[in-house]
Structures are given as structure tokens and as C-alpha cells.
Length: 107
Image (cartoon, rainbow, N blue to C red):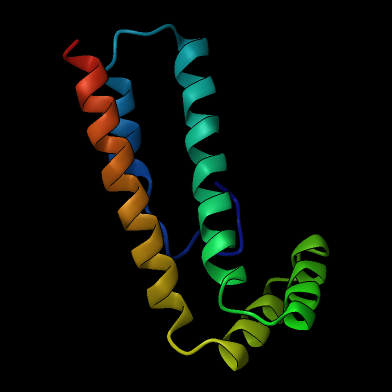
């Protein structure tokens, strides 16, 4: 994960669970990519749901240009406690995914 929010989100714990599965290297890589994508989209959804239509456009422009400083400046101006919201969103999804992986591993 090399995103503008990477400093807030730890995914090592879920990757450890993934490694415990009896899958090929390619399958594990594919699942890791799906996890990363799910995390990214869930975080974007959480942020976009807090922004007005105009602010959504501005935010997405900053994301498209990969300008981390502008992204954070904008988000901190528009959404109170944005870092905590991102952390909570990521943690909730990680818990759900970890449960799914653990369940799949025991079947």
C-alpha cells in the first residue's frame, strides 16, 4: 500500500492471516491486491460521504495528482477528525476481512 493515507493504516496483521492460508504465491498476491483495493475504496467512500459535491471534485483532483500535502490540507479543512475516521474505517474493514480469512482457512 503506497497511498496518501498509508501512515494511518497498518495492514501487516491481515497479511499475516493471509500468509497462514494454504494458497499459492500467486493466489496470495491476488488476495493481497484485493484487500488493498477494498481498503482504498472503503476509505474513499468514507471520505466522499462527508464532502459536498463540489468538495468531492476538488478532493478527487488532488488524489488524481497524488499531491499528498494538498490532500491532507484539504481534508483537514473540510472534515473534523479525518485521520481518526480513516483509522476507524480501515480497522472495521480489517476486522471483517480477518474474520473472513480465518473462516475460509478453517473450512
